[in-house]
Image 1 (cartoon, rainbow, N blue to C red):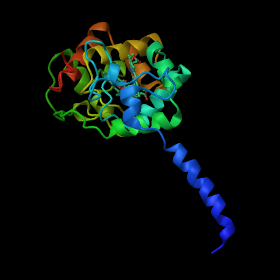
Image 2 (tube, rainbow, N blue to C red; image 1 turned 180 degrees about the vertical axis):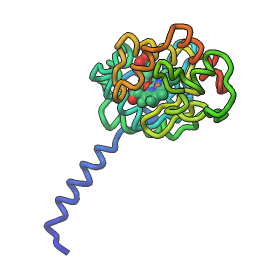
Image 3 (tube, protein in one colour; image 1 turned 60 degrees about the vertical axis):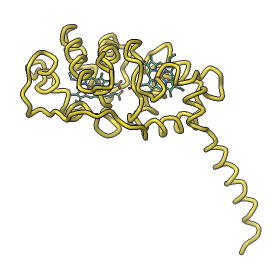
Length: 215
Ligand code: HEC
Ligand code: HEC
């Protein structure tokens, strides 16, 4: 064995230990090491189920990669939100990785997987399952999955989120304060929707779960 290698191994070990030092439960429940990173639990709820009335989104069961990208976009302002901007900017990369990985492993809400072959009645359900192709608006479930359960790291779940949060995001895209989506996929859709359609489709997805998100 080559003894001269040991100091290097010790150094690498020390680096990897310090890079993994963030405790996700502490970040979620008490905040990041930097005091500007407020405790997530205050707004996102004890089980990360969100707070429907306040419009704070559910984080439990969302993709870690999706959430890490949102945190980076809040920090840079690509997704403009005065509350999350300072919090995201104050998290260290290790804290952001640790807390999002922990949240992604929490249970997702139970959702009936209603796909585009189901019958569609009413404005919200029609948009969700059929889209409005005459205006180049594809059905929401074609990207967000049957029942809006979310698909992979790119298409977040809509089911499990409150109507308040869903409509706030569609309005943010219309107003250009959220513009971090690939190829303006959502910007294009949101700008094509009327106010009534935004309300109806948000209520439709919020009501697909019994988590209280629809209330
Ligand atoms: C003071 C309230 C508050 C605190 C504390 C808070 N958040 Fe948020 N969070 C929000 C709001 C409001 C939004 C929605 C922002 C928007 O409308 O774009 C949000 C959105 C998010 C999103 C995007 C979710 C999605 O579906 O795109 C992530 C990820 C997130 N927060 C993570 C965290 C983490 C991690 C912490 C703790 C370090 C935290 N938040 C602390 C209020 C808060
Ligand atoms: C062509 C694919 C596509 C279609 C169709 C689509 N979306 Fe999306 N949607 C996306 C992508 C991609 C994102 C994530 C954007 C990002 O990375 O920030 C998203 C995100 C969202 C979000 C934000 C969720 C969150 O957690 O912050 C809402 C709300 C939303 N979409 C609503 C809808 C509604 C309502 C419809 C149908 C009218 C729809 N989407 C149709 C691709 C699509």
